[in-house]
Image 1: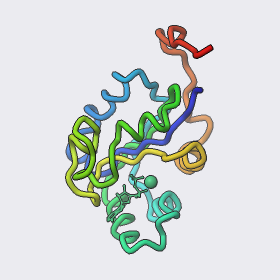
Image 2 (image 1 turned 90 degrees about the horizontal axis):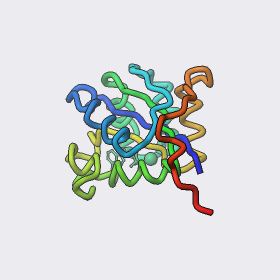
Image 3 (image 1 turned 120 degrees about the vertical axis):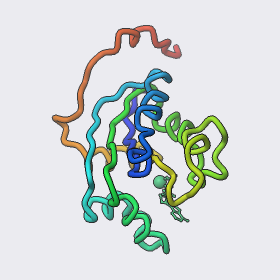
Image 4 (image 1 turned 60 degrees about the vertical axis):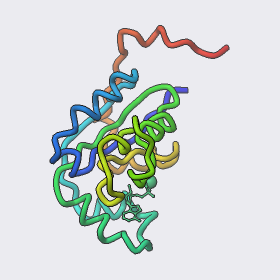
Amino acid sequence: MKEMSFVMLKPDAVLRRLSGKVISRFEERGLKIAAAKMMIITRDLAEKHYAEHSQKPFFKDLVDYITSGPVLAMVIEGEECISLIRRMVGATNPKEADLGTIRGDYAIDTGRNIIHASDSAKSAEREIALFFNDSELCSYPLPDEELVYEEP
Ligand code: IDP
Ligand code: MG
């Protein structure tokens, strides 16, 4: 099933100039970038995005972090890509993230774990709507798309 996920490269990823490397992993895996924009997000948007964590002790630090510099917000599309991207991203605490995952290869600190990815279809829908208008989502076929094997 085709899905769309909201993926955001956090300020440390952008400032460490890792954006290209991380985007390449998604492209090389066969996923499609449906939307992308560099933004410095407001506290209001950050608080809405992370609303589920509003009562957590790290909430203020998290909002400070995510608003501290530019983020690269993206919508990524592909077959069952929500869980696939979560697996590619790795554990929230990069010290526990497997090597070969994005966090496992590029991060060391939970508070600077370089990337966000939606954790469910419901979150993806909510997060995409927070960051993008429908008109910003690009629908286009990839040359190899018809080669994807569909389970009978
Ligand atoms: P996720 O990003 O892997 O989905 P969540 O539990 O949803 O992880 O937490 C959202 C973000 O909040 C994490 O990516 C991380 O940046 C931050 N965070 C989570 N737990 C902690 C913590 O214990 N200390 C500091 N920051 C945290
Ligand atoms: Mg989360």
